[in-house]
Amino acid sequence: MGPMAPLAPTTEPRVEEQSALAPRWKVLLHDDDTTTMDFVVWLLVKVFAKEPEEAVRLMLEVHNEGQALVTVTSLERAELYVEQVHSLARPRGFPLTASAEPE
Image: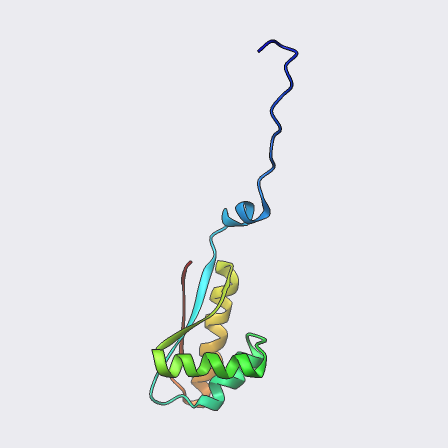
């Protein structure tokens, strides 16, 4: 092709590809034998802004499966969620555990 040939169209990266550059982190809740179901539902509504029906579904998943994926977010936000879960559960005598891991 000569210098006057039309250039092939360029495509901009899609938003999904751009956000994929920043690693995403999964926030998980883990089951234990002490934390009450009511507390887990309350926590999911208050801390994670889940609708009550979704909070109950996630609580049952934690109870039945041993853990549940609650949200996927940035590392900083995931770490904050883990801290919030622990700081709300411990004073109430609940050993509820949250963790963050790469998606």
